[in-house]
Image (cartoon, rainbow, N blue to C red):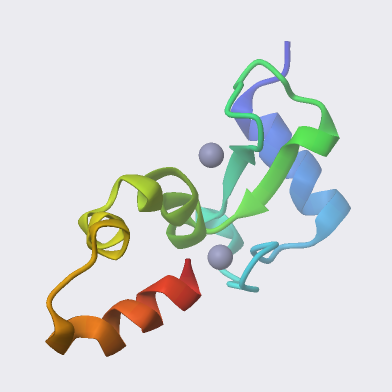
Length: 89
Ligand SMILES: [Zn+2]
Ligand SMILES: [Zn+2]
């Protein structure tokens, strides 16, 4: 059974010490993400080494209030902002 620490070290060795998504380079705080959300599946294909910011995006963005506004539509005045948000999503 591999520990989280061993997994992280393995990924750092294999893929380098930066976030795989944005290139953030403080490897001390990078996190191991399980693409299929199954923490038991430690297959390398299922693992991604990403920074806390990208990790939070992955897990929480879809539940955020901004996503709800985009889906439900907002006041006209906010159309530009919403388009920007939408692009990032
Ligand atoms: Zn990142
Ligand atoms: Zn994750």
